[in-house]
Image (cartoon, rainbow, N blue to C red):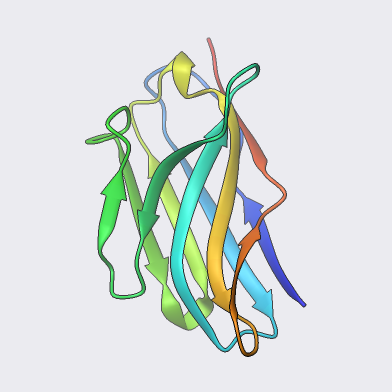
Length: 119
């Protein structure tokens, strides 16, 4: 079985920075696209950023220029560097990975990590 484990969330003042990490482990043959989503209270889950296995990236307009997604393929780990944080960035952040764990490619989710931006 495959697991995605996130870390790095917490409380930060406006303008501050945080780095989230997500490590995939288990029966993994290959990891394709990895991404970060977030869900604020009362809102739908939204895509924040994703990165392909070759390093191509895409970002939501709301985080462009402030967030950077990166990955370490040797460690099956994806990172999200978040700078110039705003109160509206407050949400539970979820890691997602398209992982080949056998004959098929399956989307897996992490358990989520809380990010709170407040003074």
